[in-house]
Image (tube, rainbow, N blue to C red):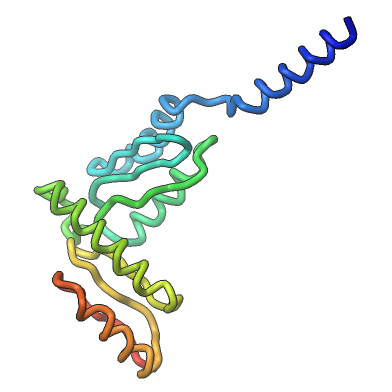
Length: 158
């Protein structure tokens, strides 16, 4: 009898620990509510990761929205699949936006050894910003010239 009670107690603890208390559907609804201020943005939560897509009118607006989505209970990570458009209008071709985001991730990975460099999508174009030394800029230029897509270099050499 004691073993049965002990076993049931352990199983109850395991099931309680596995339940995070909020479903993906509820997480998506809460994240969508947060993004309601941004009519050209959407979000979907899958396996604890919020995938934010759409268009924002500025990088600051996008960062604010991504940060806010990250506060939703149960969201462990936020995947930035959104773009910035100076006029705030949605990107006409979503395939192009996804391609730009994919290329942005490639460049981020290639430049991960340069922490002062930010790789952002501004006006649907990949743009590098930050402060670097002359040596770093030379190395960065060698890396980015290997890509067959345009990358705007707005780095400041110190």
